[in-house]
Length: 294
Image (tube, rainbow, N blue to C red; front, side, top):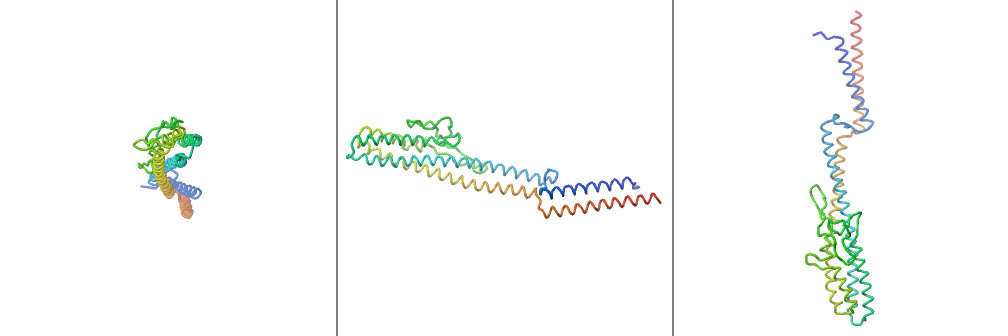
């Protein structure tokens, strides 16, 4: 088979084109620091990059949800701390007013203070983060506590993802912690009983409220401890999730980026290859031209 001039020129042109593409690619990589911009640049690496990018996005989304849950628990704990402070003060008032040395006027004044404490408790328990009532269970349609102490929320506990497929309690069951559902003490009811006993000027009845007030204090403290444990779990999970997401992102960069030294070396090699292809093409053209002249 005779190799024609057109075949020689065609092959030389093809080699030159490939060399130019290689130079353009190397120049782009050196300028941007990115090795894989399109799937065709390195199909295997591109596939791995997509997988790691999806993992990073998933972990980031979980971390965002966990961060929101931690903030809501912090708000709930603040509300419970307010309730705890009220119970401590109410216990002090009950202890003092149970003493027979106090008169009806003293107890009437104390009742006014207790009523204010009850209003303060209701306000604390209706705490919100954004549009969510943090002590309403899974109900966000209305404030969980009415002025008379009625609970309008539910007994459900929210669950939030802290790792792929792993969930953690992210709310306080106020039905149990405050209203005593399940065998506990109705904290608001205990405060209301103290107010009623003070208004009735009944020191014995006032004294009888101390047991419920002290039990309520322990009950609220237990709820706060549980919320604190959940907050610690979320905070630890957030730190781990952010670290894992960063590692996934770093892997994407490692697969798709190129360092300056390698990029410069690749560019130099591509330029030499292009020079060699152009030189070979020119020499081939000269030899073919000489053959025709002879």
